[in-house]
Amino acid sequence: MTADGKPTLLFLSPLMPAEGGNGLAMRAGATLEALAARYEIHLLVIPLAGAAAAPGRAVADWCARVLVHPADRHVDPLFRLIAGVRDPQEQLRALLAYPRPSLCRFATSASVREAAALAAGPGYRAVHVLRLYLAPFAEPYLASRAPDRPRCDLDLDDHEVTTRRRIAGLLRENGDEPAARVQEWEAGRYEALGAALLPRFDRAYLTAPADRDLVAAEHPGVDVRVLPNVIRPPGPLAAPPDGEPFTLLFVGNFDYYPNSDAARYFCARVLPLLRAGAPGPFRVRFVGASPPAAVCALAGEPEVTVTGPVAGVTPWYESAHAVIVPVRAGGGTRIKILEAFAHRRPVVSTAAGAEGLGVTAGRHLLVADSPADFAADCARLMRDPALGRALAGQGASFAGSRVPGLLRECLSG
Image 1: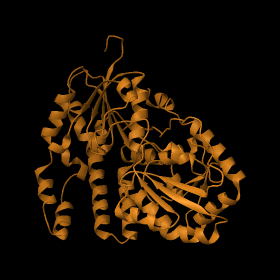
Image 2: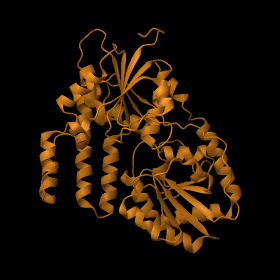
Image 3: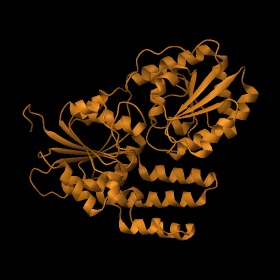
Image 4: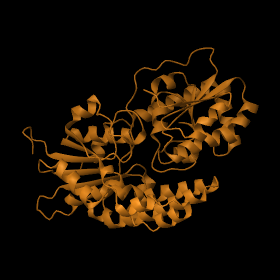
C-alpha cells in the first residue's frame, strides 16, 4: 500500500503502452490508464511485440516506475540451435519439435529471474499480464505460497489457438504450406501453454464474447471475462478536401500477416472490379509500419500509395472518404474499425474484420465478403455521400460507447 492508500500493481506488457499506434499498444495503454485509477502502477515492458520505445507523457504519468527487461539477451539454447539449421526442411522439422510457442524462447529460467529482480520493490497486491506468451514471466508470483500472494490476471486479448489456425488457413490458401504448418504448430503450443498456466491465474480477459466463451468452456474453473477494445476520441476532424479523388484508407501494422494479406487481396481481387464499377476517380492508401516487399510492390498500381510508418494517423483519416478493412483472418476485435468510427469515416469490412465488435451491417458499416460485393460497396459509398454520412454518424456513436473509461468497470470486482 502506498502513502496515498493505493495498492501496488505490476503490469507486464510485451511493448510500450501508448495512446495511439498499433492496436496492442493502444489496448495496453487503455488498460494501464484504467488500472492507474485504482493502483500505483509499476510497468515492466518485455519487448517481444515491438521495440522498447520511450514512454509517452501519459504513460509516464500513470506509472510510478517504467522498467524494460531486454529479454532478447536470453534465448533458449535449443531454439538458437534450431535457428542455425541451414536446410529449410530440416529447420522446419526441428521447429515442429520445439515444446513451446516461439515467443516463449525468451522466457528462460534466467530471464524470468532477471525480470523479477528488475521489478522487485514493493509488495505487489496485483499482477496484470498482457498476452499468453508473457505468462511464463509471471511464474514467480504464481508460484508464491505466501498468504499475501498477489492477485494475478491474464489479458489474453484473443483466443490464440483459433487465431493461429485461421492464419494457417490463410497461408495455405495463399500457397505457403511451410508457414501454414508453423502456424498450426504455434496453435498447438499455445493450447498446451494455456492448459498449463491459465488455471493458475485468478482471472482471464478477452476482447470478444465468442473468445470468452471458448476459453470458459476449455477452463471451467477460471473466471473469464470480456475486456473490450476501446478508442480514445480524436479531436475535431476536417472533411476531406473538395475536388480530390475519392480516397479509400487502410491502416494497420503490416508485420501482422492478416494485414499484409488484406492489402494484397484488395489489390489483386477487389481493385480490378472497382476500376470497372467506380463512378469516378479514386485512390487507395495503405498506411502503417513494416510493409513487406509484397505490400510495397502494390504501389505500382496507379491508384495505390503505400506509406510505411507515419507519425500519426489523423491526417490520413482527414484526407480519406472511407476506410476499408478487407481482413480475412485474425482474432479478437479490430481496433482499426473503432478508430475509423471515432474519426467519423464510413467503413467497408469483411465479416472477419468486423467480428466480435457487436456492430450491425448496414447500420454501423458495410460488410462484404466476396471481391465483387466489396468493390460494389466501395462504389456505393462513392455514389451516395448521404449513406457515408449516415454510417459515419452511427459508427461515431458506437465508438463513443467504447472509450477508455469503460475499462474501469470491466476491471473492477
